[in-house]
Length: 261
Image 1: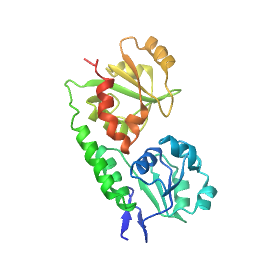
Image 2 (image 1 turned 180 degrees about the vertical axis):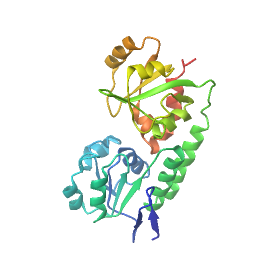
Image 3 (image 1 turned 30 degrees about the vertical axis):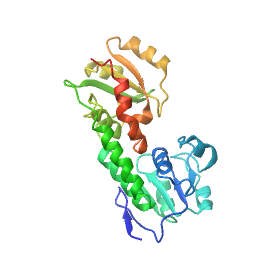
């Protein structure tokens, strides 16, 4: 077996294809299912809600940022699949002392495709991974950008309000959808104010379903403060999950923004 370098530069060496895998990243858990790794995946987090059958039946090892390390050790995985942003560095480093940990670090579509390809290689599902990537690229080729682009802000949290900045995967997906992120000059997930939204020239305010579960009541509250801006609830999984869920992103965008002009 070759050595593998993850997206943070960490090198792991496996002697055989892993037969006991724990995923601590929801979007990558769904990818492992779509790669056909039903028997190999033995542990997931409480946030790995897709597929539903895995959520119901697979062993839970805690949350993405509050892992039960003792339970993971008891499962004796051959491989743990983590993410730099979604998991806690200290816990990942603790796991690395005992197990191979492959860490993704994804800000762009290309990096997502690279992750899918590499997990295919490392789990002996390279052909399926290649087909998923091929279909993702085909579906994304149907997206077209209209100019001028629609100026949007994407909120992930309230109290305080937090938006997606220009170095996030959400920002990359906004660009693929033909949208202009009004907070692209800010990094990560900055705290913002109603005044900042008003001053940004925002036309559409996108309220994500995760990690904060924005709902219709929040639309009404914000609409009263921002009467000239159209406010839309969006599926956070579609904008932020960087595994096989990307297959459905282009069609989702087309249905979401039919009335944007």
